[in-house]
Image (cartoon, rainbow over all chains, first blue to last red):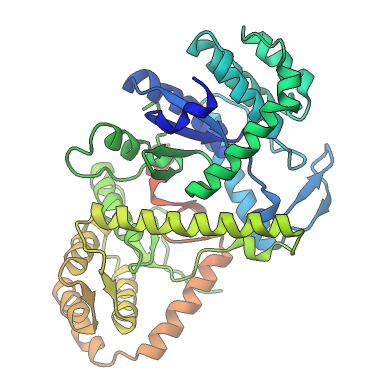
Length: 229
Length: 208
């Protein structure tokens, strides 16, 4: 499946590797694909977090060295991480808050590449899980193309030409996609696109499935899946 | 320090009845309370969600353009989700509270919570109320309140909208100081859960 095919895919899911919400949702979304049989088309949405939560940078010891965040913004950020950490721990995952706001666009381009070049869904899942897990353990520089190239290889995905792609056609494809998604009304991750309808947040997975299955019966209520779907 | 009237063993749900998401939440939490045999009280919380983007210093033209486009997308999404919640409740798109009706409903909700009326009782009251009329004014709210709690009839005769608004605003401000960011939210033993959909996680905590 190529990036350009997303318009005809059954279910498109927008993610950003630097989002804690996307991190705690991705495993559930993979389960949804396996159990429901609907193929998920993963789309990178590279958020400009500084534009809605301000920016901040910390030292290794957690001391803030640079920030323009207001107390309200900090309270929202801290609440989000507190919440996401609970969900990550429940999945047996480690979530360490990043020390800066990363530019995740290269990882997004690598995701496009992985979708286009993975021979199996397992390879794609391995790549995503590896990058997500290591990034949230502060063990993956998602701004480094060589590291992303190695992650592709580790997942068994051929990577010859990836670096050139990331600096040329892949960058253009990524940037065009950002414009398309924003125009379509996608503003956060994870977001699910069914036809032209957008669902923001994993709490809508039941409703997403309901839509995919033809909207039979009453619309489900929202819930955050705590255990597996 | 304001006395919230929150007891430690109960789950406290904070809602804004004018937003269908809160009404959906009340229904969900009432079913959950019954299933879990968990004490739950429903309280009003009337503050606009924090707009963190508005507090970001101005940047380059492209930065500002991104902010504006993302903000528009977010507002469009909220409208879409409101329609979905109205559909979940089988309500028409024109469903709304009058200003006075909303104040009275939240004032009544506060009195019910102070009397430890459980969510399982509040839920049918709210669901009956919201489906009674497309435009909810003081008349239908008052009738519903007296039906669910006849003892309120006397107090309703002395209802002062301005004073009620001030009381609700003061209380909501104090709750936001405790970390409540938006409605619907839940509090359990001083921990705040933004969004009713965290019930499964809350289940695990209450069982622990």
